[in-house]
Image 1 (cartoon, rainbow, N blue to C red):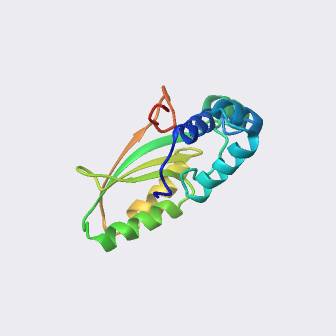
Image 2 (spheres, rainbow, N blue to C red):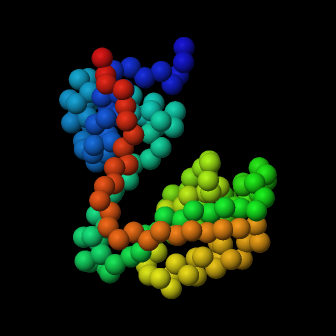
Amino acid sequence: MNEYLLDAIDLRLLSALQADAGQSNHRLAADGGVSPATSLRRIRRLERLGIIERRVALLHPQRLAEAVGHGLTALVEVSLDRQGAEALDAFEARAIAEPAVRQCYRVSPGPDFVLVVAVRDMPAYLALAQRLFTDDANVRNVKAFFSLKRAKFDPSLPLPEPA
């Protein structure tokens, strides 16, 4: 049997968790149409399989900015001179080691990577650019797009409708 096979209950639980991972197991069980013990067992299985990677709190950037000051978000395209597996892996390792890099995608066609970067201000971005792009002799081209407004953000993944 395929251990990654998901049934309607698993899909309902995953959907409920994507909507609000902080809700109680009793509420999740009600959403999944199962007992709390079954809900907990299934969620632990989904975590063990890595289908549930982790549970996080999503912060509202505008409200956080009012409390701690505005930050700067950039979407950055990075092209490398050499695209061999070793060179791609080396840049990827450096990028994901940077705390300011919030997301890292290896893409094709076009640039080799697209990064989502969050920093406090432009001097912090310039320091990151120096460390990650300028100091790397294999980085050929960098194109940064600075966010003026986040119109939509939905980290949930589409799931099939449960039967």
